[in-house]
Image 1 (tube, rainbow, N blue to C red):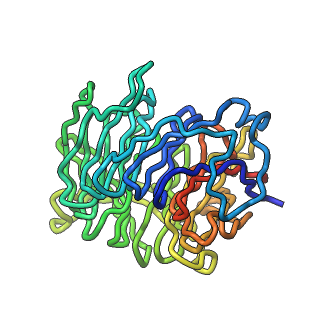
Image 2 (image 1 turned 120 degrees about the horizontal axis):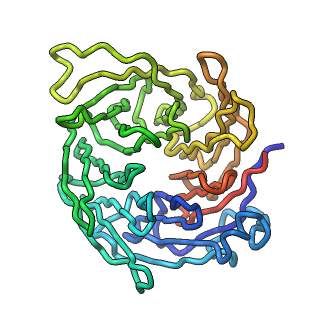
Length: 371
């Protein structure tokens, strides 16, 4: 029977942990918190841990555990990184030396540690959002950075090196808070998820960034999403307790005169699967997509994990079924963080089957999925 096995607890934050983010190599995990700090964690022996050879012994789930497991260590703490809650954190994907943090103080900070350096230093502070910044994400090339906020805007920044960033576009098409931004894994496309119940796909048309597609169907706030590792599908999660899976179809016809100045619908997306609202009992805050195992059948699309305000983590197996997609619930882990919301789930793409979660209990947790 499929199950999630707890292998490590990461404790040290003094407030709820909002997000966890793996680096590209999969050996470091960054977390951020309401305590205004960001932390970086690593196993004492990463190769042995993820191979299950050292320090990866299963733990009996203890909802009240507040001590870091002996197999992991906090290697960096950026205290008072911002004046308010740090809501989002992301490693730069190409070299992994830089870390971005987005905060409710309205700013996004870029931190970097030189080889052999003692601590992370703030290389740049990106300002412009009128109030809370909710999410930050690097493009796969590391050249672009996207942020979004409560001011309904999405900002795109370009890195010029040496901590120098220019804002190249401010996108104001959403009607309410923007909760999350997410880059496509292979194409220069950006997805944004909003309190206005929609998802927008943004694309550079050569002159500026514009809405290439608007995905509608959720009945309440869309909290976030995850692309499949090959980029063919997009999963989204919502306050309406559903998970939707979308895929790109034929190009859309050009929009009408009232479509909006920054709306040029050149892409069309179709919802090909919906996990009904009877599966999750409260709002779903986070989703992460892990690709299929090596040698898996061609129709195997991998695994989805969801983190929910009903305190549970759920694992779904996803498979192609003709023009549609099948989604099967294979495991539900109740009270993954005790009686606390699960704010984020993140598969480790470099070490398949390993999942990080974080919650309102102030911890991050490392799990191994056993199918």
